Amino acid sequence: MRLPYLQNVYVTTLNLSLICEFYERVLGVPIKFKDKDRWAQYDASMTNFSLSSVDEAPEAVAKFLLVFEVDDLAAYRLKIESAGGEITARRDMRRHGILLASKDIGGNSLQLFQKATAPAQR
Image (cartoon, rainbow, N blue to C red; front, side):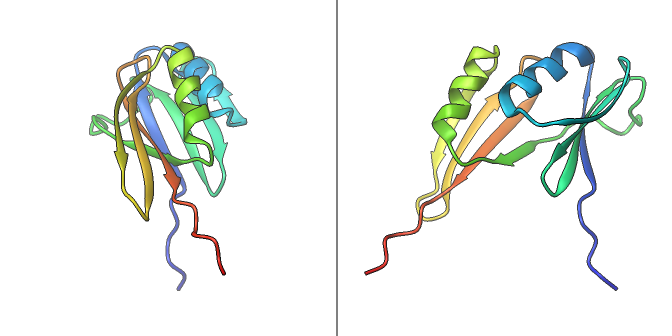
């Protein structure tokens, strides 16, 4: 039996259109499916990333933390700020990389991670 893989992660929001606009501007992820103001699903490489209206989400969905790996943290920081998001912290994890914590325009937590570059080989 193969190991399971993460098929989808989704965020519940009160204003789906507004949050969709934010993530489309910041991440530039291609949309796979949208059901009016109830659900939007995006292709995020090896998994799906979705945004859900409160009506569409199960009652137990309350908190989440999205972490996206990116290749240019500085560029994404500017995108978050220009889209109305807020940078809340930056953490240098040395040989692992850098983590940028932020909030989207709905106040939801979002983190971006950039791996450390490998030292040059001699």
